[in-house]
Length: 535
Image (cartoon, rainbow, N blue to C red):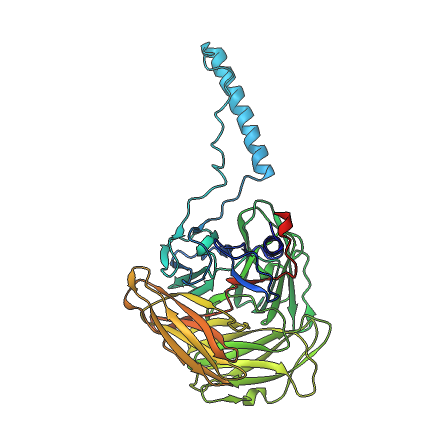
């Protein structure tokens, strides 16, 4: 075994230990004798995704679309990509109860045998359950090949969280979209989320403990051992007092929803939620429902950074609220800009710099900031201010009066190599591409449909400082749903988001998913020496 191969193994171990998201190994036929100093870019060979329990409403209909882009060179020929319901093993208390019940049953059997004189079959011991009977679940959705999505539906109020793993050629860029339509009640709306990899740290600016909101953070544990999570809440004056937000157990292969308003007695309209784990790892996402505005999933913000981009504000947005949090020790002085179709401006509502105190949540109502033109919010240090990392999200409302709907847009990083949004329909999808700095060119691939059709490819050039909102290409002969994959071709960084809109009884339902890079490729450090003598 030479040193390059050892480096690949070390990289795989580090990735699995730190994120649990992906592992990489030398693909079949890869040259492991190269001694170049340039890090190799290799496809991951294992990915994990977690989908939260969709809804408790009897009126909920949930669609899932799973997809892996084609074309990850060197990723091998085999592999699987399956999502199955999370199934928890019996906990100690339940096991103890079962043992007591078994003892009682055995004693009852012995008494019956004494009465009847029937001792055939021995001591009356029960047949053991089949190995794994209480811990395995049949796959709900299984992907067969890259480039062609698969879809499935669940229309029950007790639909479980899903846990999945992809390996081999299906791992690089594996994406699953969960889209739930709730047609009535306080939680009505279009709830969309991209299923997330497990991690140990999440930030959610834009949540709420207000009386008009019912916000749940869903914690899903994919592993065979229990995880322990902490949930901290931050309002406009700092930390919200909580006696129950620390040490929350998340049993093995289980999902736990936590209602934020039960963690504190303080009602705040704008709250930042920080989820971290003491042990183990979880998938985390916030389900936010407003009694008047409907609801949607709030995904985690990108990691704290001094400059952030929030792409994908619809052109017909009637209300936009920016929520920002500075997790470090320093305050942030931010300049708020809007990148529209024709250029970048400073909105009148953001004429003054936005001051974000350390450990406090700041908000800014931008109103109908887009004025009929799709856009993206750009945040960066004000003139003369320091480079203070922040996290941020937008609450976006469409419609008026009783016919309103809400969605959330977290800050997201640029597409560095590739990103995908699954579950697009023949109508209702809009792709937003924002180039905050220089002009960027991207390639967009509309995959084959889950029920048939042929992929279509189109390129877009986005001028620096603008947002381009386009109706994306639709596969030829489309049947079912399809995926959109964005890949940079040249120029400056491009940030992307996908909006899916569906009008229901006059309500302009919609959901927005940002497209962070799919991390399907990783850098593997090169070596300076050849240790082939170790072969």
